[in-house]
Every structure is written in C-alpha cells, then in structure tokens.
Image: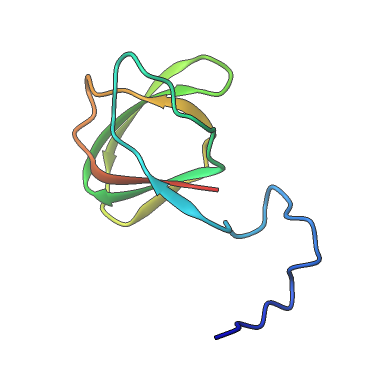
Length: 89
C-alpha cells in the first residue's frame, strides 16, 4: 500500500522532525555509526554522552519520554542509567 508523503521532495533541515530512528546500546569504546539529530530516552535515568564536538557530558535525572536535541557521537555505558535510548535521524 502506498502512503502519501507531501514533504518527500523537500530537503530535511536541522529543526525538522526526524525521518527515522535507531536503537542505541551504550558503550565506552564504540562510537555510533552515525550522529543522530536528537536522542529519545524511554526509561528515566542519567545519560552520559560524548558530543559531536568531543565533550563529555552527563545529563542528570532525565525523565522517561524526554527528547534531548543534542548531536552525539557516543552514548557511554559508564554513568548511563537511562534505558531504551533511541537515536533520531
């Protein structure tokens, strides 16, 4: 079945809704295969990341269901207690 997409011919900008998503497994040694435009946190907790610019940051006490509009190249397993993390493309 075909689905109508009235926006398929427009280029996606940085502030536009994401087109796709992928699960993220935190790791202290492996960079993500692509840098997402934002992160979704499904289960509450702390989120330790390495930003696209290379800075180590921990978002403390992130509530479940939060979207963090931060581009990251790694979600670290050390100090990350949040779960069900999704990268938004």
